[in-house]
Every structure is written in structure tokens, then in C-alpha cells.
Image (cartoon, rainbow, N blue to C red; front, side, top):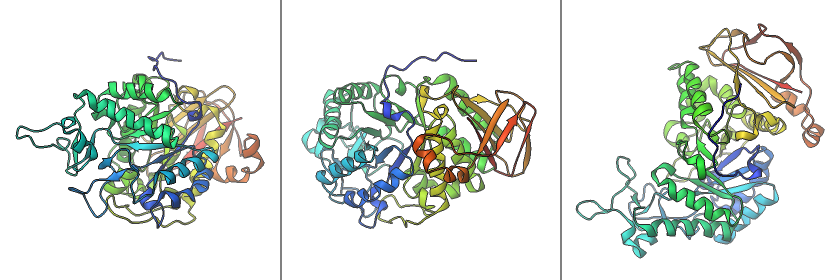
Length: 450
């Protein structure tokens, strides 16, 4: 069965086809906290099989009403600057150049909704900022963002200034796009205009920190799947069953353009700093959540430190460098992303195969689906409960010969298999509807074909 979707009117860059994304918290990535030091991590990041590197804001941070010692990177003082904390424009160019050499693409974090209280823009264009009845500047209403002040997009000069500033970084630093902070608080027409302006230079990738479907129509390649993260957290903490995820996938399947890409994550800078690490958020369900983020319809995110098993909340306004170490989580992500690159069925957006649900004997505790691209296919079964289950596969395209994929199988075949595209060998299975798969509590199975 196939459904028609309203098409978006933008073209994703070809390099986003099977991409995964990595968020760089430059302040915490290294003891130095600089872009130059971060360059040394790029080969290691590339080895995870990620393709897009998202740099948190690189601009000079405001001083007035600053939070903490160093302030929030999202309180931008000058959109045309590189923060002296991080380095120079030359350092940023060197970072981007090295990333490109490694086959990575770099997107900058962009804060178009607000500036710091002492921003250069406020000095140059005070009319760009809304004011209250007393003529005072206002932070974004209802939030505790008292270290920033809003911009007023009813003033036509604001959109011109912001679009030109974004173009500057594509031209001067050769960045490949932007992650756009609180994108839904900025008028959609602005993002459409920016997309058109940047595409005249080169293909770009835009990620919206927002969840509205219309942002996909003409502006954004990808939006945050906050709802997915919330549903998965509710299940992991016993507050919901698998129907919470079905609700997310139902909306994603029918309400969003077929070629839209959703970003799936178990951590990011906001989650880690304010809600807790992925270990706190998901507990025993973490591994299953990661498998789902990599194999279901969406692009997986790795946040700085996840691959080292970082179990600390990284402060938002101060330095607390990540302690780098070898950790099973790094091996787990590396294996999963290597597998993801091999199977066309798992490609992003309309490039990949749609998820076809497999109904099981345990509908409230198990989610199962097939993604079949013809030449290859992936069957995923996840036990999202704290009890072992013998899961009967009752519906869906499960019949046929499969091979069981595991990180160990991937690692064993990572040499020649990774270079020539051949899949490493795993346990052979022949399935029919009605067959069963035994899974431990919070256990998962990934079966692949060929």
C-alpha cells in the first residue's frame, strides 16, 4: 500500500541521502575549547560514519545580562564575528576545509529570533527590536530567556540583514547550511527567502529546531522530532506504551511531505543540560531507543560525548570539557551507522523505503516494521518493555530469508565488506508469518536482506 503525500518544493543536497548528523559542542569538546583543537577530532568523528557536522553557535557572545561565566552561545552579539573564545575566522575556515577533506559537511547554528542585549545590531538599528508599552526591549515572551532580546520581523530591514549575514558565512567559510534555532518563532517566509538566496551559491542543508510540517515545503530539509523523543522517554519510564510511538509515526507518515527528514535523537545540548543524560532519560531502554533512531524513518543525531559514554550533564554557560575514552557506545553507534549506510532502505526521506508496520502478539509492548527498497530490506523488532517476550510476527512482509544483524557481525566484516559495499555474514533465518522471535527485556532484533 502506498499513500500520496503533498510534495515539498525544495531539493535536498544529494550528500544528505544516507547522512547521519553529529553535534559539536565546541566549548566542551576539548580542554582548549577552540575550533583549532576541535579539528583534531574530525577524523574520529568521520570514523563514526556520520556525514554532517553541526557546530553550535560560533559568534561573539553578549556580556550584558550574561548567564554564567561564559554566557549562552545563543545570545549573539555580532553575527559577523567568530567568538574569541573559539578562535578566528581563519580557524573556522580551517575546520570546514578539514571536514570537507574527510567527506564531511558542516552546518552552523544560527540564531535568527533574538540577539544579546548588547548586540552590534541594536547599536546600528534600534528600530529592529520590538518594545513594550514603556519603550523597553523585551526578551521572547513566556520563556526565561532574560539574556536575550527579540528581533521584530515586521521591520523589513531585519530579514534583509539576517539573510545577508547567513549568506556571508556560506561565501566566506564555505559552510554547507545551518541549524536554525527556534525556527518556528521566525516567520516562515524568511526561511523560504533564505533558502533561495543560499541555493544561488551552492546546495545547502537546513535543519529547523521546530516540528511544523510547513517548514518542509520550501525551506527546511529536516526538522526536530521532539515528539519522537518524548514518546520514547515516556515508554522508557513506564508512563506510556508503544501506542505513543505509533502516534508519532502515524503523523509523520501522513501529515509530513514524503521527502521530509526528521531528526531522531536520544540526546542533544538542551536535553543533556536541562533534562539529563541519555542514561538518565532512557535507562535500560537506551540501546533500543538508539536502534530505533538509526533504523526508522529519520536521521539519527549523535551529540558530543555520547560516543564516549559521557554520563555527565554538560553545563550550558560554563566550561566542563568532555572526558574522552573508549566506550561500547562508540562502537555501537559506529556499527549501526555503517549498517545504515549499506542499506538503501534506510536512506533519508523519499530516498529510503517507507516503514510498514508488522503487527505482533504484543502490540502494547513491541514495535516492529519492515523497510523494503527492493534490492535490500530491513526488519526491526523492538521489545519496549521490562519483561522478556516471545514475539509472534502476525502481519506484514516478513516472509523470506533474512540474516540477523548485530554489532559484532558488523565489526567482523568491517574491513573488506565496508569498502566494497558487501554485507557481513550473520545468522541465516527463514521466516513466515506466525513465526516467533524471542527478545529479552528492552531487547531488539535487526534482520537484513540480502
